[in-house]
Length: 311
Image (cartoon, rainbow, N blue to C red):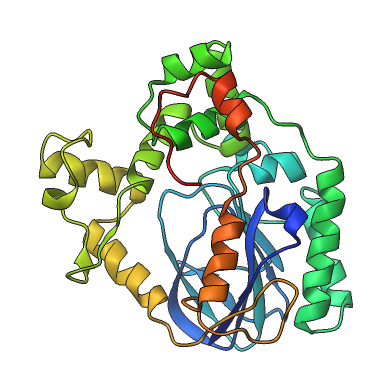
């Protein structure tokens, strides 16, 4: 199996992280389901965690398990990785209603997604044509996207504070009630503010021990983390991520060590080399600087006193 990975139009980086096409047959391949939209371009036999997928289009807003196992036959499946909240902003989907499972998109319930699938079916089966279809479709949706609400600014606060701020304190900075903030986060992201903060705290941990090539260990986390002992850390990790650090290390390591990933620079769909190539790494790093807020918002929210992480 080969994965081809490439970035969207620069105007879309606030909503979309990357496009990825998987080609060829594969068994028990771990994939990250949350914030994914997938099109079965060749209608190949396709299953996720043993569940056969009959629809040509599936999506997932939020999923507790970090990886699900995928089986597929020969042919192309295209995955779009969205930013947090993009399903609400672009498609108007209620995150609280749709979160927690992988959903097969039908024409009556999700016409915009099905329309994109039809456009992909009609396009030539080339990277250039498929990328053009995706960019055009999402740019059109972006023109009428739902505006940001308190949930987006809360997500920003959660990011810059590394998940350490209390929900009540964040709501006070935003000038809304905690109940209003909770409703907005659930609608946009599919999860409550407290869970979002806990996920950001774990996001700032290095899940791999780079020196010893092993899973994350509690004893190396540092003294400033909100865990009283290893048992507390492991319970929180499994509760939030759905797997132990060792299991995540095995699955994530499998993906990182795959020799058949092909990366493409934006605007150059010829094969561009390894993800470790300096030009590729720089472009992906630049694509990660997608936050629609900057120093002005930091001042507005009174966050000047925080040691802000690199974005």
